Length: 393
Ligand SMILES: Nc1ncnc2c1ncn2[C@@H]1O[C@H](COP(=O)(O)OP(=O)(O)O)[C@@H](O)[C@H]1O
Ligand SMILES: [Mg+2]
Image 1: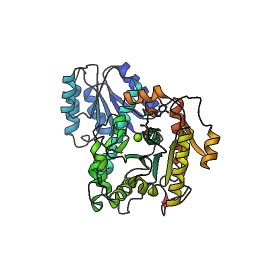
Image 2: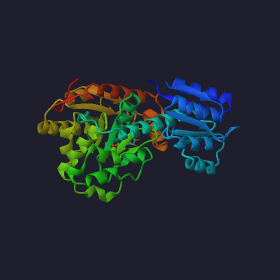
Image 3: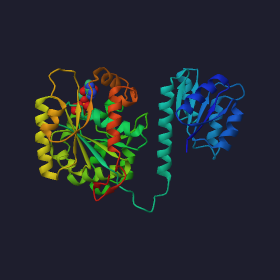
Image 4: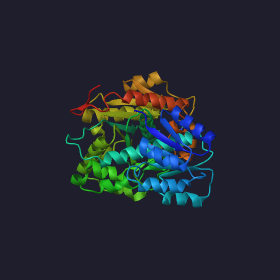
């Protein structure tokens, strides 16, 4: 069922415009053009979200917001305040009145869409948490590991964009950065200084439950949730008992559908162990002979340790050099098919980081975004159904 959004504005034109934008995104829209009407409609329609204008003749939006919060029937409905005023003072007032977010007019459709999506995702997550624990144990979903044949090959970018693409496609992924002290993923999307992963990894295994892990997740504006590492150099040395790492993987697989892991490059003691836990392993390769050979050795080691058949190749073309190894040579050397080729997009990759967004959310129509989306599609079969650790596709 489509989620229902109540849009409140005394200006009929802006009511229509916002209504139309939201309908295009697939939401059901109901409207009100006075504060009084807003209160009645909120109570009778019980929308999933309310977008509320601040300046209205009959009743100020901030008062409407307060009244909605005081009424038990409407107190939990998320509210985005929407106004032409850009004064910081109003923002503060909006939050004091109980608003969840704030948008200033005129708003770009993409911004409106992403805020709405994020708020709805957050509120759905909150509701899910408040549900009484189900009697059936939670099922584990798939673990998808992303590993680089060498550092700087684009591993973190692939893990992040794969998770974001899965989110766009309606899955509920959680992304996990397993690189203590080198956690660039959070910084890429503006959530720097995250220490959730370090806090989890410093706990004894028995304490690491899905609920505890959920409490350390951070949510990006897009609704994408992740367990992130900091970039504090010394964290690299943090001792991580194997049971703790394994318990973390296992809890993440209950929390995300699927769980996507950035395992970094090469085989450290930590990711050498963790890779064996992955249902699927994407090996990120740069199309040059040195990296392809490193990938070959890595595949050999992993498959001797923990069996074959899980590893797929993702080629990331970070630069448009003419000295590239042809894809069929890569396939021949590595003895398997390439799952995805990500084109060179240095400007877009840079812009994405500047805007604290994964590439697929910054420019969903870009060629690389399409490549990530297709990669995500190929990961979907079996995300939910794990039998004995083997994906049933
Ligand atoms: N398709 C691409 N084209 C150009 N640059 C890219 C592409 N993908 C990633 N990058 C850039 O390459 C650099 C390394 O990427 P990152 O994902 O951090 O690699 P790793 O995790 O392997 O160290 C980053 O600056 C990133 O923005
Ligand atoms: Mg990285």
